[in-house]
Length: 503
Image 1 (cartoon, rainbow, N blue to C red):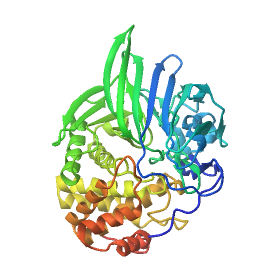
Image 2: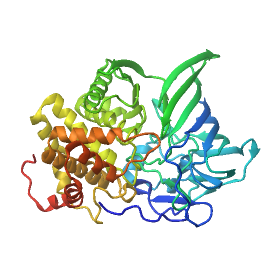
Image 3: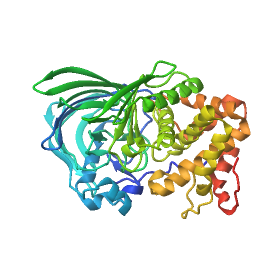
Image 4: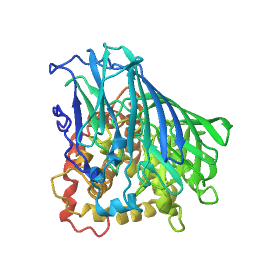
């Protein structure tokens, strides 16, 4: 389609806002090109012990990462995310005024990482934060090709009183990208690739890892997290939980003290647990129905349990492996249809974007454009063609006719956009591209192509746009690259058209 994977920058460059931050890279080693690493590597293992200190509004964390060198050369350092430091200064957030007030309704309060010690293979390690906002941590090591080594971190994560991806709100505590996660090593350019946090979509670019997490909370809290949660025991009004997740690209947890629990089960046996302030099991049933449709179309679902959490997150839902944070406002009266659409999207994203993993910022359309369209196909499946077309015309047509400066296309990097532009280009116009594919190859052909694309996913692989084209071709016996390319780059031509009714 186009050669978008150009040579990356060789030093961390922080040039964009939180609402549209650019990709940054951290270079280590020499400048000569390296051999490609083997296609399959043993997975990293994250062992994390967390205790919530309620009075201090902080997480006390001990983390041990068994890291496997994925390259064909010796590594002298590894670069990690330290996204919690985004909250250290108000100007580091750099969100728009409306978004900022939603995230900090009581005003800004500082937070971040208080790092107490770093070790590599049991010995104190040299380390240093990098970047203007100290969002990355470089730790010295000595690892040969394929060798494993243990990085250990002791730290406190101070949580702001806010409605962000890390924070304490009125009903819950949220922690995503809170641990030290290694960037993805690019063997071609001998550098670690890391991404600046975004507020409006997934951005953490990581290798898959196995997680073994121990979480200690005041007894009144209940956790919801990536993976399976098991109550280990209760002592002195504190409960200890063990959470395990295999082959996850990222790990997120939240816990609340005023949640009601309800459950439903998908047709394929996936357990959906809804933690909300609402009575009844409507949210659990809606999510289980969306999972069932994914099972019918794409086969076995990638997770065996899915948590839906009513959360003080703003301004929109956040989706992680095995868990969905949906803003509290969506659980109010009259918002059932909107919540249902959010849950359909989240159910699809457990497959496209997580199990079938694409680079979350550079190739966001391979997740969010697909999942946006699938959420409307699910609506069509349940409520019929008329409901589908009514929703499409309500939600996409104004976006199709909106002029977006900068020459951005559906395949542009999400880091170049703000929330409004992202919703217009990636979600609405990207969904229209999927609709044009459906009209050209038929609904069954598109679903077959998406199923083939999903089967390409594995914890050891990052899918690309050419994988997507190959899946469509294999499923239908056609040649779809030219058709897809034409629509990806020319769907913006709808700006110059009058659309009375879009079908």
